[in-house]
Structures are given as C-alpha cells and as structure tokens.
Image (tube, rainbow, N blue to C red; front, side):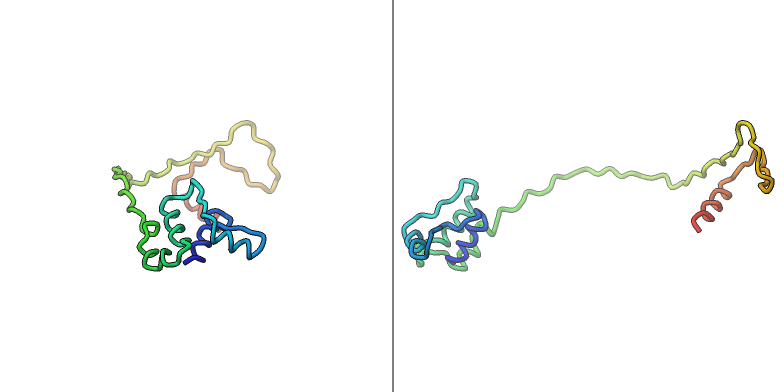
Length: 138
C-alpha cells in the first residue's frame, strides 16, 4: 500500500512526497518527516493517501479499507433538471416551386452562325426543372 500511496501522491502533485540526494538521506526523511499535502487536494484524496502512507504498517490501509474508502464512492449526482420539450409539427405538404420564366433582357448580341437562336420567352415548369437537375447530376 505504501508504494501505491507514493504513486497516487506523485500523480496528483507531480513530485514524490520525499526527495533526497541519496538512498540513505531518503530513508531518514521517510522515517522522520511528515507528508505535506497541498491545499487544493480534496479531503477524500488526502485521507486516502494519508492512510496509505502511514509510517506504522499496522495503521496503514489495506485493500478492504481502500475499496470502501469515500474517494472511490462519491455521493450520487443530483438528478438532471426537468426540461419541457415543445413538439414541433412540420407541415407534410411539399410546396411546388413556381415555374421560372427565362426572359432575355437588353439588346441581343450577334450570335455565331452555328448557334441556334433562343426563343424570346420560355417557361419551365417544375417537371422540366427536375429533369434538368437530374441530367446535370450525371
């Protein structure tokens, strides 16, 4: 449990709880120094890590203590707010697009001899428009 407590502490803070230049000094720090916890650590996490880093092995948390610890069993979330949803009814009738009138405006420019002359007014109905769109897609 001690090693797991060290790893959790280091994951949260970014450094191990005890630092020293060599193994002998590290051992002395572990035996004598207290573990310092930052203020931004939650109470549940602090109690969990503190229980794992007890100097006396008989006071240290074991697996059942860790499994039932409040850190792993947070209080349930409040229920989501009830939101009233308005049903939108769409009109099932599809409106047909009105026929488009193609009208040439302005002076007629001279056309090459091989080009057929366009009629001055031509009206396309919705079927002609759908057919022309289908042809353009191929």
